[in-house]
Length: 349
Image 1: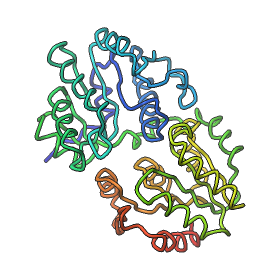
Image 2 (image 1 turned 45 degrees about the vertical axis):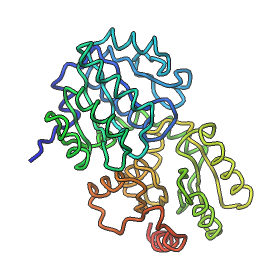
Image 3 (image 1 turned 180 degrees about the horizontal axis):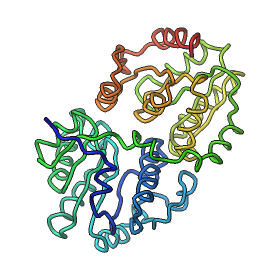
Image 4 (image 1 turned 120 degrees about the vertical axis):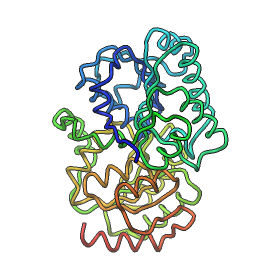
């Protein structure tokens, strides 16, 4: 039986001072920024001080995050990144399904960096709350092998990831996604962030909350469902900044212009503000969105959500949540299935 180690227990029992934290942070993606905000809170609670955070666009850090006092390293400044790694004794990979469907060349470079940092530079490498899925590409499997061989400890966030990493590294243990440690955060510290969202998006009653992701046919499905529900308040948006997905935001603007009941948003706020906004309106919101962390946000706040599965990682999440409903792959999702969910939940949400 696989041993389970809580991420908080590892933080409390391991000397992670003098570390560099690396993830997909700084692109404005809700899930990635959520993971980073969680780690910032957990590091401060642990009393850590010397943690360098790699970030794609440091000048925009405060758009998405509180200032925890940790130095930022520009992710794409190779010299600065190398200096941060050389200066510190540990490398922490902080969550995310890096070795999955969305694996890309940058993650391959990261995996190579971890391998050489461990075996040439003698750094300790910790993979915390990470995912490795069979849906990845052959290059993704190579990347996961390199990262797995580099790791001193791997805390994998679901059964599929545990199985895959255990084939590479026996120091693999089961854990939870970092978002599940949100109860360790003081919600009062985000009251001002939530208040700004409340002013921007006041909720007066039951509201459909749509999130867009660029998946084959999904934009069209969302547009059809919005058009089919002119009598219901709708919040529709991107879980990234508009500049990251301008085509999606242009579509949102067209829907807002066409339908009086539609308000739109993009991610230009702290991710935990959205989490606590969901909590404040858990009896009013209904989620239709495929992203891993927005589904988890809905679940943790008792909000009805549609079990859309676009990747293995979402299937693994739904298994962990003991959600026994029919999984809805994007290819099999229809306006009728979405509408049936809306009709059922809008009456009881």
